[in-house]
Length: 452
Ligand code: SAH
Ligand code: SF4
Ligand code: F3S
Image 1: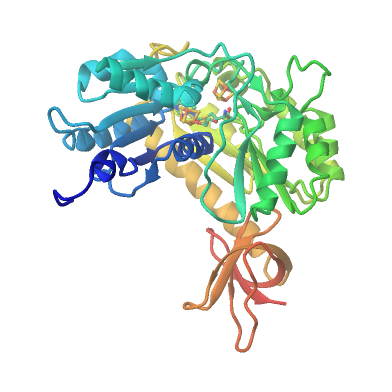
Image 2: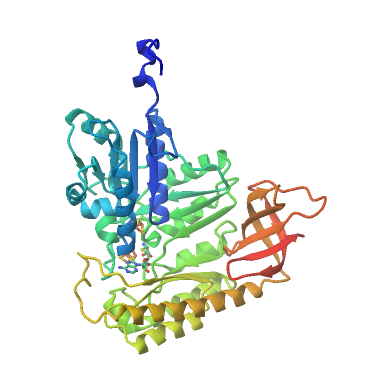
């Protein structure tokens, strides 16, 4: 900027820029979209370059120790961008922010602002206070009368994330999430439906409904609506082609939800239902609130109602006192339920959780070995399942079209990724269209083919 610039165009009128880095689950990704929405309304512009940003936000996860380490090393790199006396703000949000609070500022005094997930809505007032008071700001509380929903800025595309429920009333003994996300709160159905409508107007065709425990949706709702009612209401949104949701809890998944899934043409035939372990002894120690038999019963209902349903899960190995026999039961359960995919984790003890300090955690080498065996079994099963799709015509919601490399890609109703070659003379589809693709090959990562 040269020194002839009139005052009104001096640096203060340059729109401030923000830079957000996101770790963790889809809920966190969506929280970042909400923060982007709040900042856009306040006149901020996004930037990919943290050096150019006057506000840097690190939106953190703390579910396992590795997540903490990732966020801390990122913060370690970013803190050096702060110049003494400079105006740049370094903010930490998300689940690690909720858990660590002042401690973050103590270990890295460059951090100006720490705000847990429920404080997303207070971002601007906190920034104002920081500027006025010139001292560290800490935001926390879950005592919201109802979940607030700032306008989100999402990346353009076909699929959108939509939070319907937040928080968790369960108390799995290994898990920090109830402490970081607070008790369960749900958004009213009307507010979700109206956001879904506006997403369709913006060109989105698929929504993924988010909640720590979506089946707990509506708990305590004045008219007693539950998750099945929400699914039925969204089924009527014109122009919305596909509905997905995550995460479900085996104890709270009810028959009315299964029924609503089965009857809806928009709710996709895919359920992510974390089982965590195949051993009842481990499930009890994890305080999951169900037995393997009860999980099996839910799956029986699900497959009776939706025969071809895809089932994915989460699994933890190396939990306290897990024996080779417990682990074998997990392998047996995986083989029995024929999962279409799974996220596997090695148990990470989290301070402040009920299981923290319990003895009997297997040696790291043992846990790594179990993790590898589980991963191998799953990879084999997924490849086998994908092979079973060869020769079939799959309906793909087109997400990406690449004219240069001559392919388009998207997902099947069962959430398998498909890459389809563009044939000689074929008119490329548009993102958001549903097209039929004949599958002719696969890997464990996905399917390939060409348009029927
Ligand atoms: N609300 C969701 C997500 C919880 S975190 C749910 O209940 O499914 C996602 C997954 O991380 C969990 O399902 C569990 O498999 C895993 N996880 C949670 N805490 C963990 C820990 N301390 N160590 C290892 N894995 C953990
Ligand atoms: Fe964590 Fe269990 Fe709640 Fe999932 S259900 S968020 S694993 S406490
Ligand atoms: Fe991580 Fe919080 Fe999600 S701990 S997994 S960002 S709910």
